[in-house]
Length: 302
Image 1 (tube, helix red, strand yellow):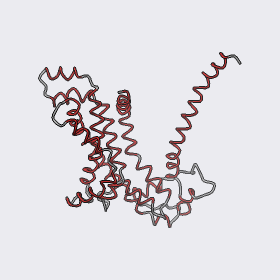
Image 2 (cartoon, rainbow, N blue to C red):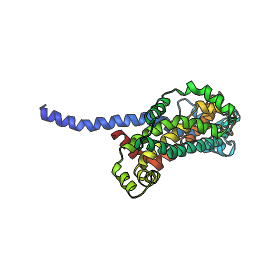
Image 3 (cartoon, rainbow, N blue to C red):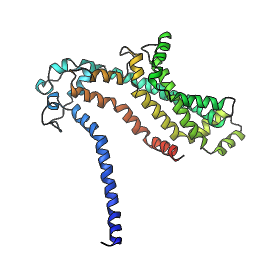
Image 4 (cartoon, helix red, strand yellow):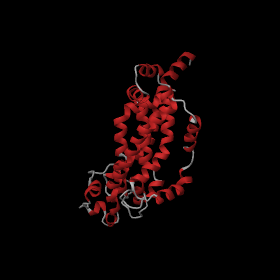
């Protein structure tokens, strides 16, 4: 085989190999979610059958009906009776999702508003102690959460905020603010400063310049920071477990852990809970996908 033909074959095989590798990675990532989806519309007896059934016929909505309404399935041979009677804690999933959504949205909003103000100050203003404050904020992000768990618990207990949204929001802000400030300050530094100077010459204050000029230009970066803050608060487990005791403030990760550690829990119900838990971040990713991709791509390029 000539060198020219070898290069031609290599040129043809390279995209094929890349497609095969991408397909293998996609299967590796998506297979667990696909199995969760199949399990959520299956009966408990079908999941324990050997060999397993990969396509239940017909799919059953009984698992979701039980979570939303508490209605037991009529086909006990397909779903089992004893398992259903010991899985009633899954009925608390919807209140837990509501708690997670409220806390995560609050953390996201606070990060966008106050994080943008702080990041713009570090990026454009010169004031005494700026470098020391910036270094302290970044260094605080490196501290492991478990190292400050007990001090945070003592502070929250002294403030009488245990089992409240406010406790979770304040703690999550302490862990998400450093990244937001760092990410947005770097983003703001690479925005063209000439536009801001023109706005200042036209009579705008620094705050007006931020709102009218900088924020519209930095929408992709703000969306990326907001998504990071939302997902951090939505998925956090340690402090949600430590600072909450009842469903009044318990979040989705804590409830899922309680369901999963129940030795008699229905695997079909657990799969349904997992599918419902990934719906809010999935919807958020779909809504913010365009801005999120631009924001992350711009930050990497810089």
